[in-house]
Length: 166
Image (tube, rainbow, N blue to C red; front, side, top):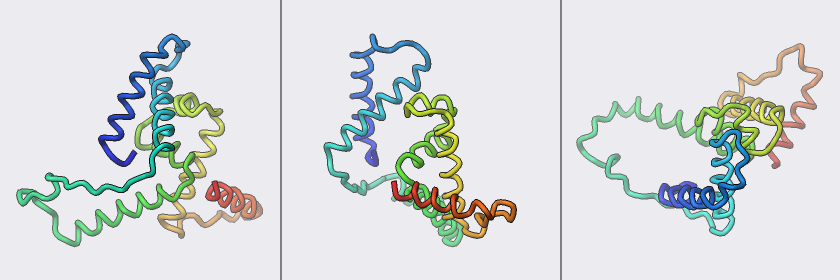
């Protein structure tokens, strides 16, 4: 959800679903169980609506009282953040979801596996590939293969292309 109000609606709908189906909760990690409901609610709502880009006026960003850094510093900050956002957006949906939940929301591997209903190994390998793809898109010089792994280059390239195609 890119709109804060839609995200609030999804959380509210998911909370109602969680209350309605609380009897199906078998114990374990309640956070992962609830997030799975939120995730499924988000996907079902997203499937019903065409995504709409809305640029809301934010009073905080347009007030004169804000002390802004010099233009060069501001450009460097916004350019770096924009590059990272673009790199994350270019990841395949599953890799992006796992990366964001792990790195930005601080989920454990076990929680990710429970929420996404996939094995721990899949979480770890997808996260590894997502990090590698981000590294490659942010600074291609960092991602050069090491000499001892050159014989695996074709396999690695094929896996990265396969992830990007998903």
